[in-house]
Amino acid sequence: MHRHISSHRDKRSVLEIAAPAAFIVAAAFKSLLSIAFVFRHKAKWDAIPEIGIYSFVALLGAVFDLFITKLFLSSGAPAAIAKLIASALVLVLIFLGRRYLVFPLSKKSDWN
Image 1 (cartoon, rainbow, N blue to C red):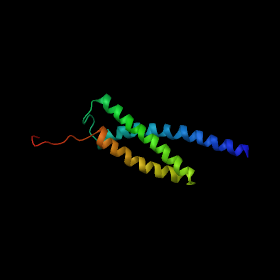
Image 2: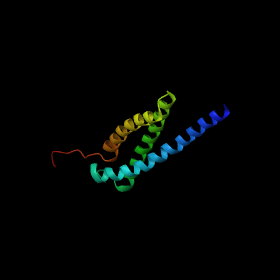
Image 3: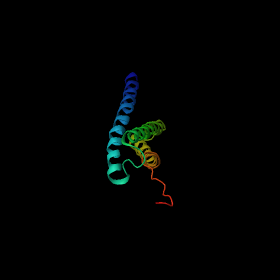
Image 4: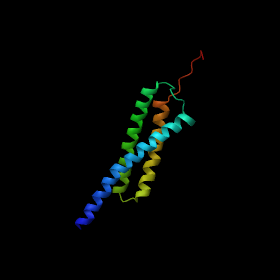
């Protein structure tokens, strides 16, 4: 019985390290892809503020991802399903954060 509890704690510790680490690597890669294919770099901000705001949005996404994954795991969902649901929800959150906070389109005026 003691071994089972220890194993459960080890899995939780690995999740709390692996999920955010994977998220950070993916966020950096997605940032490059976003700039290359979807959004305009320096749409509103210079590079440093843009990176800071992007990092903030990514950090919120990472926290939300971990929370949703753990929530579904604790409700008995299989790990793959929990991660799939969390990833889908965070994909939407991160996209909206990028679109409206990091790379906002400037409003067109009558003069443009």
